[in-house]
Length: 240
Image (cartoon, rainbow, N blue to C red; front, side, top):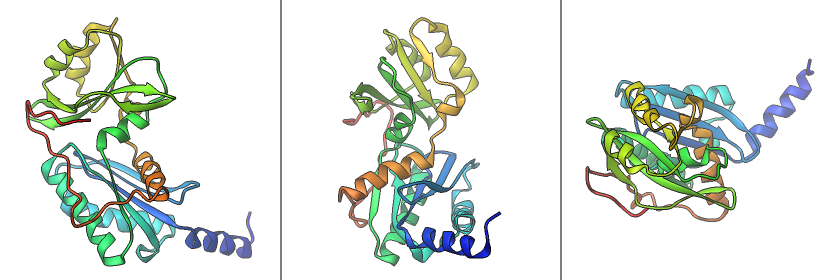
């Protein structure tokens, strides 16, 4: 058991280190994390029924309390940029921008599918990372492994599950937000589709935090006034 002096010293060390707050509201699956470059101080993921406005700020406050970090001690804020829900992305990015401007701290934006891809173990296969895009459609990002890191390999696009099924013609890893029906559809191509298990299909806000930390350390920060979400429409691909 630590002595009171030891516990106090540990708390002071944590509070003295730079801390990054990561916010991902791309879809109904929301994620928050606090990261200091060495360890994840706190992480929270939950599924919201489109109550982002009511749930986000209280959840951040609770997470800061658990991590023993004050809002004024956040050194940088990171936000997932999408694609995803128009409303969810707008709410999350607005809060991240507000924190960055109010506290005069850097803001880093990370494409949401890059967060999902970065959480996958290296595999000698192409990969499709997917998010729910509403109206029974999926946002799909295509990736290849380059020097043990997943890199975007094609355009991000909106596809129906059937279109994704038909698009896969070689052995491919598929990860991300998939309903039970969509998983059943894709498993019909057992010889070509390698479905990631549900834990690896969860977007981890701690991965967003780590990616954003690396960009911050490299000086790759965004202008809060001009940073905008990535929105996609059906049959409207954008460069990956």
